[in-house]
Length: 293
Image (cartoon, rainbow, N blue to C red; front, side, top):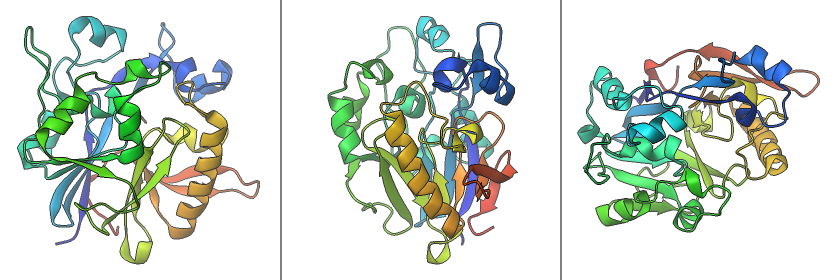
């Protein structure tokens, strides 16, 4: 069997557009994604499901989930009360119990909160995915264990201990992991958060694969090099990392998978005669797309 890909929607968010677009003027970003009356823009928390990847069911990220109590769910703009990711996995024919590997680009709550069961009054946080190995970049794990005041609020305090106690945590410190071998190549970035781990599902002979872009490139507008987020640790470093990676990926025909774009799951990379990168061949969703297609 060949690897097939599904875009799996999790809980959605509405966050401040100015924060999401950094130093881009509102007059520009509001044309890309329309804000509401509170200046918030809609954002997806989209995961990527790969079936029969290295013989396993692999989930790239889990979105924000439903772990927040009601007060914090409102503060952080989480739209749905239920754990949407679990419903979306069911639509793809799987339960969280069927996932063999969960790959986490980083442990900010909007990317890893879906690891946890939905919030319930008086109940402590509890991990889902009872069979899965959890892959996290080694450098980012250090950050998650000892966060900086700038992004401490982005981490779930209990999550690192739960992952360690599971006995199924795998720290990745190179381009390949023990669990996925040469089926997935990892790239690392420090511009958004130290040790951000970008997973590339490799196509035949390294061409035509798919990169899970995480927060290096949250959606189509951020493919343009100067566009960064206010949440990024080092915007200039991120731009340099993005330029190098997009140059490489375009040369190998690798497509981009977007976690936060509300309307687009996958796109190719183009570059015009002025050196400006942009998305092409956009797909709003994936429903069993063969990796090589």
